Length: 181
Picture 1 (cartoon, rainbow, N blue to C red):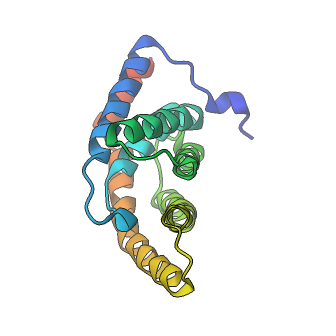
Picture 2: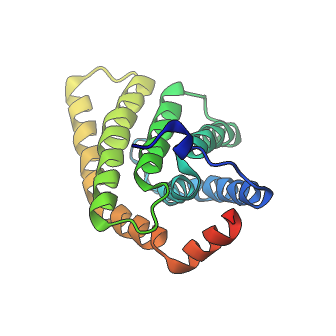
């Protein structure tokens, strides 16, 4: 059984620098999304998964908090605590599932991505959008859940393939070894 200490990595200066670079990359990639506000498609999940895989749930959650605060300030949107909860939960799920694993199986990747897409993206983020938009019409809420659920179903194979391919990349694994050793 893993203890809390097994999820906490002490960072050397190279690891801190890499974490900062990944945070900056996540902020940059997060700026490039497609679709309306209630149905955005982006690729920031890749960096979240990489940070969680390399640094664990503790640093993944802290990075998610910092990223959410910085991106809110940069974009000029009003801060909404719900989306921070979603970012924290997504990083936590990825971190618990991927951290300290040399090879990540297809099954582990599929289950992890399914959990994030269902719990965080479909349920929580839809709830936050409904709350922020003050949507009270039950038909509009059901239509939004349908559309967002369909988007998550379409994104599932894309996210599984991208995350599995990137996290099991030998070159990135060697980079990780050089940074942490």
